Each structure stands twice: as structure tokens, then as C-alpha cells.
Image 1 (cartoon, rainbow, N blue to C red):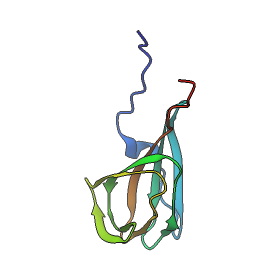
Image 2: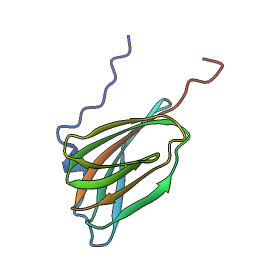
Image 3: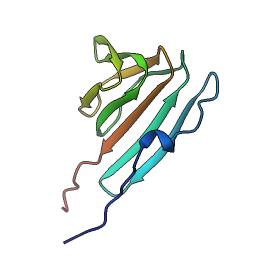
Image 4: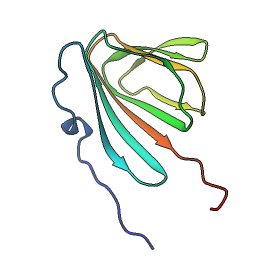
Length: 112
């Protein structure tokens, strides 16, 4: 049995102050199957529309943002959770300072 684990008491402790007019990201966990990245957006900052080759989950920890998933526009706030399949176009615009956790999951290879 594998007993290795990662324990983070408070994800926001992993984020630094958000410099004005910037987006800061920090990988808080990575292994062969999963990657977790904490994003901190200053108000007004944007991740323009893009896609990812992997399944991903967005979890909004703090703040408010405009979120576009495919053709759908919505608001995300603290507590918003999103599961995205690979290749879904998406974008984020921070309305306030935002802290968001992105988790990406690698698909098993044919050898596994």
C-alpha cells in the first residue's frame, strides 16, 4: 500500500500577494497522473480563450470572475467547481482578486 500523501493546511498560504496587473501561478502538486496549480489573478486580469489536452477541474477559492465554458458565459465565485473535458474552449476574467485551483489529470497510457 502506498502511504505517501501531500497535505497542505491552507492553499492560500501558498499564494503570494498578487502584483497589480498580473496573474501568478504556482504548482502545489505534480506527479505522473495529476498536476495542481494555484492561480492568483489581480482584478481585471484575463486568461484568454484556450483549450487543454487533459481533463481539468477548476475550483474557485476566493473572489469573483467571468467564466466562459464553450459557448456558455457565467459568473464564478468562492465555492464554484467546474469539471472540463479535454479540448473545451474556456476563458477567465477576474472581476475582483481571484484565487483558483486548477487540477489537470493525465489520461492513462495504453501501456497501463
